[in-house]
Length: 102
Image 1 (cartoon, helix red, strand yellow):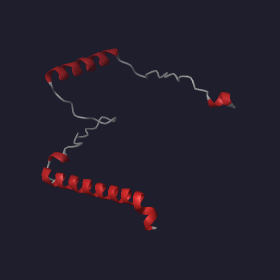
Image 2: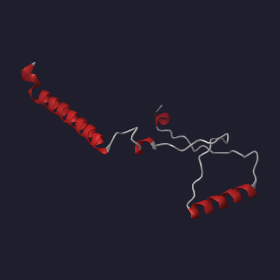
Image 3: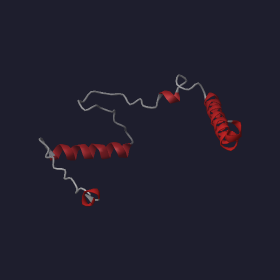
Image 4: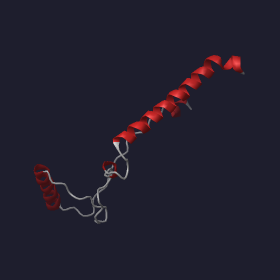
């Protein structure tokens, strides 16, 4: 029983053989990536089936639609901080004076 408790499983081996492998294509893609990196070009994001998918993750944060302004973000952050301080103060108050109140 104890031997099962301390048993650590061995490593699992990854053994996947690609069905179609073209070394020329790999070399060409690596070369294209290196050239794009040197020139500072970005490639559009494509899904697994090759369709174009726009890379807009996080782009709405930079426009007026998602967050009105930096000042409203500051106000919201201050409001959250105030609520957290109030809740913490109530919890501390109940810890010290809860026995005498109840």
